[in-house]
Image (cartoon, rainbow, N blue to C red):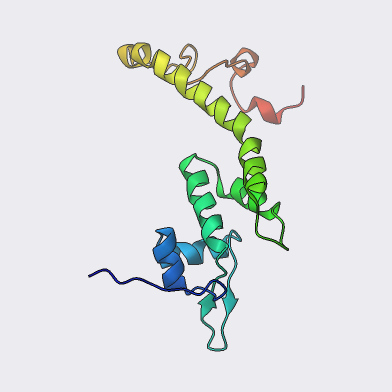
Length: 153
């Protein structure tokens, strides 16, 4: 028999309730909180309680991580959301639109990797001088060996 949780619309959620609803471990909630991605309040007994809007934030975090977005970028995005109201669909759309160029660039990079992979695996060179996958567009090699970015031009 499956136990069904009944939660009041305005009642704060316990870490276990949030973890169950969001499909994450309680330790993930604690990690997200330490990283400044979500917030909780404390009861008189010093137990964490979360507002229901944290479920949407956790979903956003998980989807963003699945896309390869860094926690720092996710935190920046979440920090741009309004504090005084629950984020709207337009707020979430604005955030995802901001990452579109980054995702398009990564898609392009992965497609180039896919298209050139046969030749790379076939040659096995991984040459710093000639491999277009290992060292693409290496203009620094023309300036000589060593840490060229640290020297002034």
